[in-house]
Image (cartoon, rainbow, N blue to C red; front, top):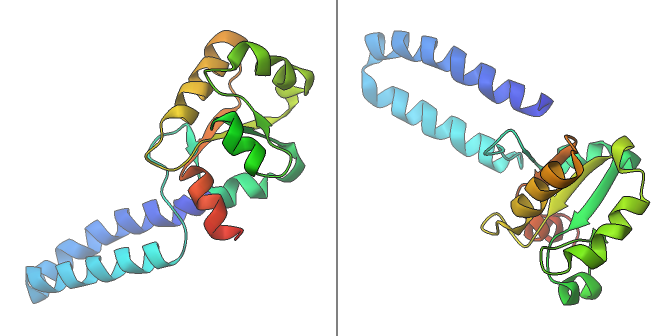
Length: 154
């Protein structure tokens, strides 16, 4: 999570600095500074993964050809459009689609599972099942899912 290092370092530094700012200018100025910093972070386009098993789109794309994209959405949505190179795998068609996933050298790939949006938990369920049934540790969920991909690739 290289890009998040800046954010976490900033929070640590900000806490220490914030205490000095409060002592000097009062608590109102700290609120203004923190809101400004959060707005700058949001507008930078970087997202903060919610769990250690999530990754944002920019990080996943930076892995290039070492990624196997897995689409956990419905087959009809996958067939309509999907991330180039993605393979379908959802809980409803697991037995049929798992053969396609096994055909790829999955132990040498970083597996990025996505579903519809940040509110969808299908990708997390598929990722958990891949870890449990296939013993894979190189599985992450793309935060924001297809919704995030479409914003970046209209």
